[in-house]
Length: 306
Image 1 (tube, rainbow, N blue to C red):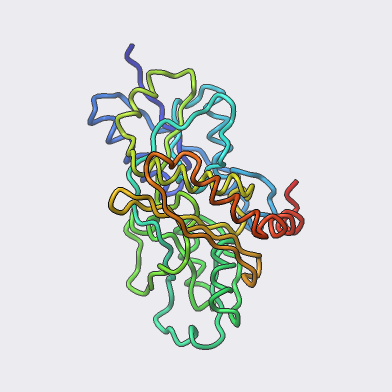
Image 2 (cartoon, one colour; image 1 turned 180 degrees about the vertical axis):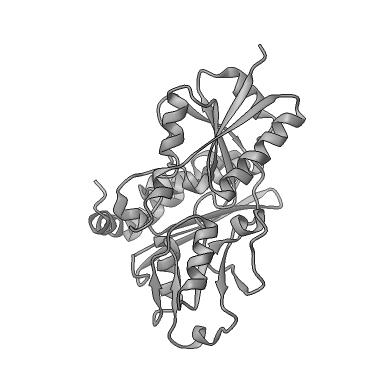
């Protein structure tokens, strides 16, 4: 069977870059493709923090609906935005090789504020909690919008800086000279990875996408997302997770923070490839058993998560 694979994507510059990357890879393999861009609810409502919108997968829901209605065949996402449980009928079809996993602070040239009081911006509860844990005298303002919008808001405000995923800025060549690497900040689960989903019934698209899958990235993001799912944090709770492979061993670091960054539970562990399938769950369970369960209950109450 020969058909044109319709690629669904958000219409931001970064999302389109990701979709075109997948399109080129499929085209190089001989497949015919078409890109269909849509605007998500998360892109339209910019005056409220994400957690106040009360929707899990706010950046992916519109594309999920388009797939289920048969308007697109596959969808390309930043994997960190994708809920850990996919809708019925939609499956993970490929995880592309991971880019830079870390966050960076884009600042305005002067870093004196790091030694005193300062104001930085981020729409991520995880980034806010980890920043306040390290810089308790600082203030963190909410910052929403796509990468371009957030960079412009940083310029237009009196904030000292704003936190971004390095991969997003690097992919569309918007990484400025005035930044510092935040390699001490544990990234969001699956940060820096791109996920392509397909319909469970669409064997043609699944076969095409199987050629794009990067096994090491798939394994590491599986561990991180399983850690997140077991903690039941959704996409917005202050949870960080990072799995990396060194010398045939998988090294994992995970963290659960309170909203103000004062309370945190961390774990560092390693496993071999034979044991990775339940590794993220086991690490999360250890945090829950050591006091994290009570913190998660407080977070759910604070964030009104049912």
